[in-house]
Image (cartoon, rainbow over all chains, first blue to last red; front, side, top):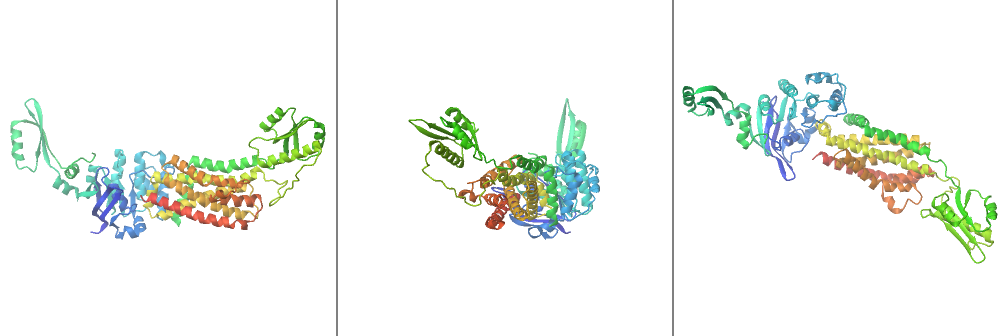
Length: 286
Length: 346
């Protein structure tokens, strides 16, 4: 399979702080790669290098077989970017924002109404974006990222702090774009979202990618699968967590069932959170 | 190129939709011409003199009645004469005490009276003293006019102000463009532009075109309202206004690059204006062209505009100033580009 994005040994430092420390990865065509990590891990700096806003101080970036150092303009005509900051022109309407950005890509006529409808935004709304809610602005940001029918989409925390309806709309559109063949690079704090949307997930911590694989592989390899049992033992309720990897678990379950009044029992799948804790020793929000 | 003009179109709409900027631009176009037309169109050449004499008042009154351009206010005491001078009811006061033991002539002027008014008062005083005392003045005074004799055609203050108004109108653009630039940076909209095929060069060019176009259009509109255009002055004024527009745009680049928000963009713009523009404006006034002031670029705008519009001096006389401005504009515009580019890339 062709790689749409290839980052090779890229690095970037802000004065004393090494934000991105010689990382390498690739994204296949039509793949969604989720990059997870806490604040300050280097996700946004990585994204800024991938979209051509920062030049890597070391290493190289290739997108759609073009070198970012030499073909930045060509690459940027084929990508779409949604930033974490709501950097829209507030004094313009939603359609005017879309038309303005489309014209920068050389598109004279775009179907702004269709894009707005796709994002669940009212196409007949003529007032300025300044009056929009946070969720509406974010959906408009995604619409803006799509004005040039990009082959690679870069999304920086696209659902961060949004209401469930807006977040779900954005997740649906990401899935649709993937189905249409777009490659997606996604940074997020949301483990569930990364698990659901990403074909592969990378964990970033202190400027390095500490793990990169499919969510299932990562969970299988580094997560803990357990059986949770809650039973009455005399007057009190006891809760126990039994590892499914432990060969003794079967006999222990038999013993509990025979001796106690079991209230409930269920397996708990490993999560990406567990994987993250495995690699960093801390939770994502810490 | 089309991307540059697409951004220019957006910038124009954005600037005009900013109420503060729109208001100061419209006020600039309306307010300055109104002020100009409210100022007196002619110079009042009447010399107002206060007089106090201990004797011979009727004789002097009779003699002075024939003098043109002299308006005499009589005081009954020397103290009253002092008050007339202090209250600026007269430009100078002349007191003449003649008695058997003492003859004393005093010219009274306030501390801020210009030298030429003092000289005029002294001359009139001598003549009166001569008429009253009856002997020749020891010194014969002659006047030599340097340059065009403006007797009877002195430049009214409003025409001197006309040049400054043109510069002031352009100064407004420093605020407007600096704010537009700092706004793009602060709101991260510049990042949204720079991940499209728009290059930093195109972005900066678009801002330069926006700044120069708006400043030039506003400057020319005000120049038209002030009535400065004639067949002879149209092209020269247009050239200097264009150079001035580039200059204020470059200042805005510098101010916008170091500004964090609207308030700091105003502060930096003010600083740039105070340091680089205000001193040069004194060139519009007599004795304002002292050597140090020629270091300020605006001197090379004010001096030619003043000369061409108020003294009928030919444009060809000011080619060195135009050349200086072209070099200075290029340098400061490149500096502005450099500072802004550095800000955008970090």
